[in-house]
Image 1 (cartoon, rainbow, N blue to C red):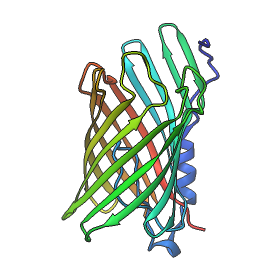
Image 2 (cartoon, rainbow, N blue to C red; image 1 turned 120 degrees about the vertical axis):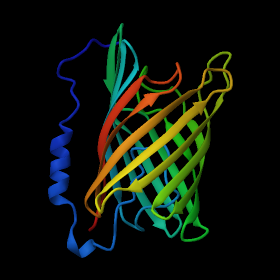
Image 3 (tube, rainbow, N blue to C red; image 1 turned 120 degrees about the horizontal axis):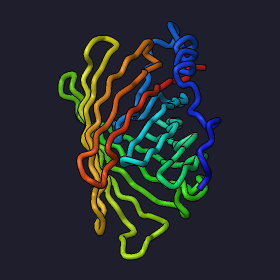
Image 4 (tube, helix red, strand yellow; image 1 turned 90 degrees about the horizontal axis):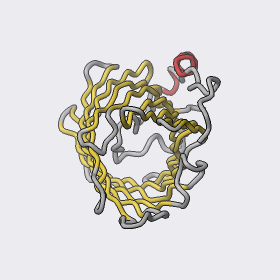
Length: 259
């Protein structure tokens, strides 16, 4: 592994957020609003605004163990190209891991997903995501081969309360000895507005490994929307099993780009 480099720092996210606040679209695009997927593990069934690019970006600090850290800049680009179909491209624009033996940093893996959305009613919808996680990160930051995944989503509105349920399966390209090639993920999130601009959300999520110890965590977050097209978020997670990360902290934004 590479030695720690004092020049390898996370970019100044507060300055990025301030710039986005100043240049976020206003007024003439008031009928369109952002559809945040971050920072929860679960996604909503809905797509973002049709034929508009929506960008998500953030910073996340993970503490997997007492002498381990994993810091990253997660991103997601969303583009619905048809009434019920969209394309998602995401990953980690920068990733650093460190433990007792040293540290390494670079670009993370990249996920490319096709998403389908189907509304049953004004309050109930389902979604399905399918795609691949490409091994764009160098070793040991990423995987050696392409993973393939599918994710089923159920979203239900009960007055102002939103419930999102996700259940998915991943087929790993790389299979370690005495382990399964498949693992399952699940997430249950609830969100509710506090005021016209503020909101709150909580989520339980986890990963089930057939032949390994499974993980689970609880996430809590606050959101703030200075404009309908820009939503800021901040919060953290706490691990619920020995195999889970001890805790994490995050902040970021979702921005709907209006031409």
